Image (tube, rainbow, N blue to C red):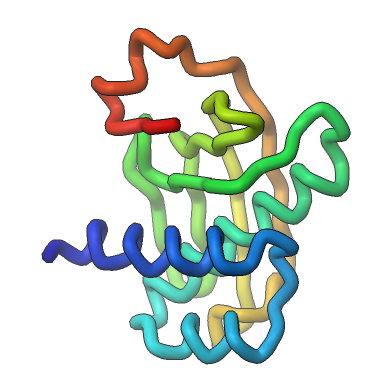
Length: 131
């Protein structure tokens, strides 16, 4: 299993098991099992879902993938996902976000995002997106 697929598997488990996106002790325990880089990515994905749910009333995100359309950029505690996507109500949407965490990779210090266009269904298989 590659690092990406390992991270994706843990991320899927985290995001489906905890739809409220709150960082309760179970989530923290699972995140603590990851490498610092994986932890930061997953924590930023959870933050993206939380912010979109709170600020974008037309969306109910249940999954974020940080690297669908472009590689992520990591520098210390900074994580940038210029080619992310999120799923809401069975549809996928482009997403860009920048996230800075504390050294522990759990505490969000700053977060900025932009929701993009809906990804056409005929492109889903090309990018390994699913219902």
